[in-house]
Amino acid sequence: MKQIRNFLFLVFTISSVHVFCQTGALDAGSEMSPSKGNSTLSMFSETISARFPLSKKRNNAWTAGINYKSLLTQNNTSVINDLWLHSIGVSFSYRTKTSDKTTMTIMVQPSIWSDFKEISAEDLRFTSSLRFITRKDDHFSIGWGIIYSYQFFGNQIVPIIDVSYHKNTGNWRIGGALPFRPRIEYAFNDNTAIGFRLEGNYYSYRLSKELNSQYLFYRQWDAGLFIDQKITGKLYITAGAGYAFNRNLQIYNKDQTIPLSFFGNKVAKKYTPSYSNQSEGMVYKIGIQLRLFKEE
Image (cartoon, rainbow, N blue to C red; front, top):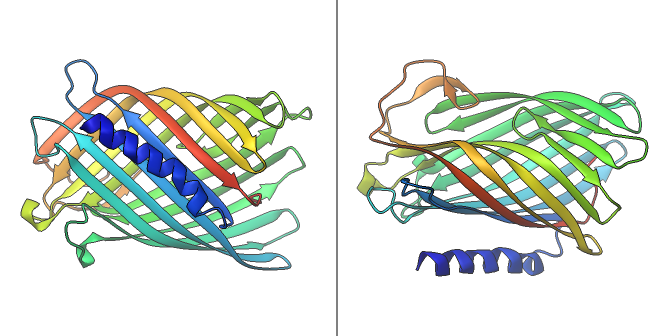
């Protein structure tokens, strides 16, 4: 049954490209992490996001987005067996030039993160970010920013550095948001590229009232190789495999919150979770992107 459900999720993800093909840009992807060794925990997740250019006047631009994410956990010996979690949100961003070479982007995103058995104000989360990027020349740009999010465990702050560099030949490219989205890739041509990526994720989901409105905290760091292949026109597929070397899934009581955290690391009192699972293992990813406009 688990394999059938995962297959249906993957089919739904790929077919979603045809549903949203009129949007400004579409990202749809699936990630699977099967159980390893003595660990009985396996996970399957999918994401779908679409961005819509709203308006652009001279140096200013408005963009809206819709985002969906799901997480399915399988564990035959605990409360997280067959636990299916979801998030859905809308985002609005504003980009403007602050100088000839520097752009500023402000983003806000309210969203709901829960098991969707019932929806209430307890399920609401909020994220905002401020980023500045300076283009040094045609081959190199650098920037900085800060992301704030209200999580169910408390307030989270994530400072970031944006880097983008490619050689004059255009084959080697280094970029991403440091420290949790760096990547290095080599482009054979305009259609095919391979590379290495590192990715860190921190999420919290509200559980239903039958589980006393507890919240689930999920943290994962993984690294691996990928291939990016153009299919046709502006349609691309990305596939990769890697290893999750730090995966932590915990469940806390609703009142076990802290004032502040950095990158999901609590800087105040640490509570004992009602459930905890720490594991590692292989991660497999596949995604489709419809790149109708280029990010600046």
